[in-house]
Image (cartoon, rainbow, N blue to C red; front, side, top):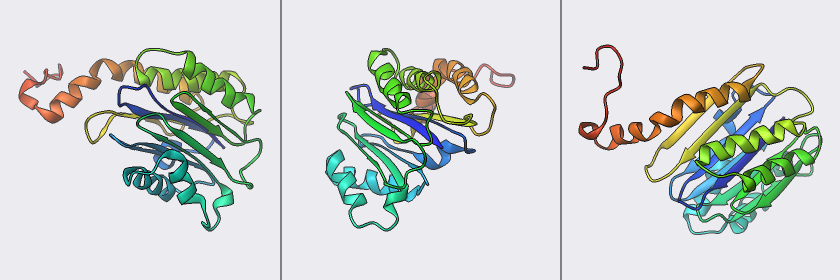
Length: 222
């Protein structure tokens, strides 16, 4: 019911974009930790596994070792689809034997994508290849990759929710955007991103040093 892309741009930023036929997909599937990496837990989702994967990375395991540590002898793991990526760009992925419908995962350079209940395996190939061809802000690259997957066929049915998040140097998500239910979630996510990106760095400054931050530009903020 879901396809996603998890990637880094080599600057220390790590992010994920995801879309699904289920509501509020980003609330369950996106797991990021600044300075550590990212993980996706999807298909029949167990959100706990994203945290476990990030904890394994933070203990010093690489992506493949962290994934092996999580899936080995774990009850019901055959229902899960997982991806994991270190801040340095090492990736690994797992699709259990009971992953739903047409499912696929693929690793690229600093990127990993996975999906289930797909229109075809070419959807995930399109996601990875679009990311590798892209340039610019990581947020833009992630959304462009997700849009390429939708254009390549997307899910077997319509997608209804989407989300995009990125971590960098501060210990919170610099970008965290969600469309929890819509007939056009990627179009709405694109509009949200275009509104957000010009203000993103200002909100980081406001968190770190309000006295150095620009005003909000709204009534009452003189």
